[in-house]
Image (cartoon, rainbow, N blue to C red; front, side):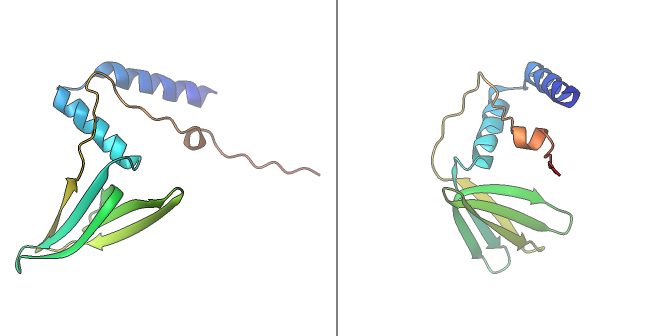
Length: 129
């Protein structure tokens, strides 16, 4: 319970801190919507030397973290509870860009916060007998 209270107080402090501009808040809300697979995106990998497209991924996709090994992960929702995850290696001559295909509403007057109780509360195994 103490852990939950600490997380709630952290969330309240983040909500009260505010963003520097409406554009920053809209951008954050669009990023959160994309991470919830609500935004239709196209991710294109481009070879700067040959001038050709290497790969294109389109759909309800969330961009993962770019790590130090120049690897990017992209997770796409392909069904009601089905997902595909792609790992792509980047090099000195291959870059990528992400395009939001459709316009999406972004409320600049409210933060978008999502709590996931399954992530906050620890899983408990009960052994009887």
